[in-house]
Image (tube, rainbow over all chains, first blue to last red; front, side, top):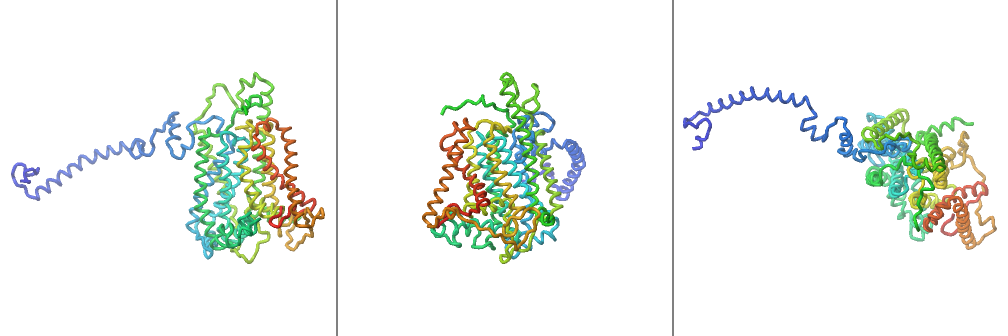
Length: 308
Length: 309
C-alpha cells in the first residue's frame, strides 16, 4: 500500500488527514523558528563583505586592492577600457604632446549620440512638423533648449577637435610608417564628421539650414559627368531629374524628401559608417604600436638609406 | 567704423566656433612650435656631440636613469582622460546655457537669404567659388583635398620627425601643410565669414553691409587680353596656358626641391615625385588664380564649350 511508505503511517496505523497536516505545519513552524534566525545571521555576515558576494564577483572579476596586477586587470578585464594597453610609455601620458584631441573628438561623438537620441524622441522629419518640433523643443520640452544647444555646440566643437587632431598628427609626423593606413582612416573620419554636421544642418528646417544646404547641394549640379550643369554632364544625358544632386536630395529641390534623406543619413547611415571606421581607427592605433610618441629624436646621420 | 555690424557678425551664434578657432589655433601652434624648437635645439646639440648622442635619452622631457620606462594606464592615463571629459562637459554646459543655437524663420524657398552662406566649415569652399567654377571649387577641389591628404604618408619619404615635434627636420612638409591648412583653408573660412556680405561682396570688418551696393568691375578672360576671338583658338590657348603652368611650375618646384630637399628627392620614386608635384601645383593654382583675379581682373584662363577654368 502507498500508505506504508508515508512517514505518518509507517507503523501501519492509519493517521487522519488533520493530524498529518497539523504535524507538518508544526514542523514547518519549528524549522522557521530555528533555521531563519541562523540564516539571517549568516546573511548579515555575508553582506558585511559585499565584494565577496556572488553577484559582485560575477560583475567584477578581480580584486581592487592597489597592486600592479590589479591595476593591469582593471584595464584589461573591462571591455571599454581594454582599448588601452595595461601599461604605456611614461611620456605618452603627456597631453602637451597629444593635446588629447583624438579622445576629445571621440567623447564629443558620444555626447552627440546621447543628446541626438534624446532629440529624436521629439522630432519628426517631415515638412509639416520639423520646424514646429524644434519650437516645441525650445519652449516646452523640459531642458529641450539645453539639449538642442548642447547638440549643436558639441557638433561644432567636434569639427574643431578633428582639425586640431589632424594638425597634431601631422606636426608630429605620426602618419609615417607604420601608421600610413590609419592616417587614411582618419581622413575618412574627418570627411564623415563634416558630412554628419552638414546633414544635421538642414534638420531644423529653418532658413539658415535650408539655404546652407541649397548652396551646398547646388555644387553637386556641377559634378563633372554626373551633374546637369557640370562639364560633359549634359552630353552624358544629365538633367535636373536624374543627376547626382537629384540622388542626394531625392528631388530637384530641397524639400520633404531631402529632409527625410538628410535625417536618415544623419541619424543612421553616417553614424554607422563612422562608428565602424572609428573601431578600425582605434584598433589600428594599438596594432601600429600604440601612440606615436613622444619618441626619441632621430638624427640625420643615423638614417640608413635603403638600397634601391 | 560700424561696430554694430562687426558685433552682429562676430556674435552670430554659428560664428562663435570660428571666433574661437583663432585663439585655439594660435595657442596650439604656439604649443607645437615651442616643443619643435626645444627638440630642434636638442637635435643640434646631439649632432655636434657624438659622445652625448650615444648616451642621451633623446627627449626634452625630464629623465632619470632609475625611472621606470612604462606607467600603468590605470590610473596615470585614465585620470587624464577622465579630467578631459569633465572639462569638455563643463565647457559644453556653460556654452549651451549661455548661448542659444540659432533658429531662423521657417524654410522659405521664395525668400532667398542674402548672403546665403554654407555651414562655417565649408565657407572656404564657398569662397573658392569666387575664383573657380562650381565644378572645380565644389567638386574637384574637395575631392583633391581628400585624396591629397590621403597620399601624404605615401609621398613623404622623410624618415625623420616621426613621433616628435620638429621644424628643422621637416621644413618642406610642415610648411606645405600649414600653408594649405592655415592660409588656404582657415583663412578662406575667415574671409567667407567675416568679410563676405550681401551678394558675396567684399566688406571690410566694420564696414556696413549695404544690400544695394553695386560693384562696377569688369572681369576679362585671359584669351581676351591676347586678342584671341575664335573658340578653337581659345580652347587651344587655354590648354597651353594650363599645361604650361604645370610644366613650368613643375620645373620650378623641381629646381627648388632637389636643391633644398636633396635626400628626400633621391628617396622618392618617379610615381611619388609626380604625385607630389600634381597636388602641390594644383594647390598653388588657387592662390595664383586669386592673384590673377584681384590684380588683373581675369575670370577664366581656359575657355572651352564644355568647361571653363
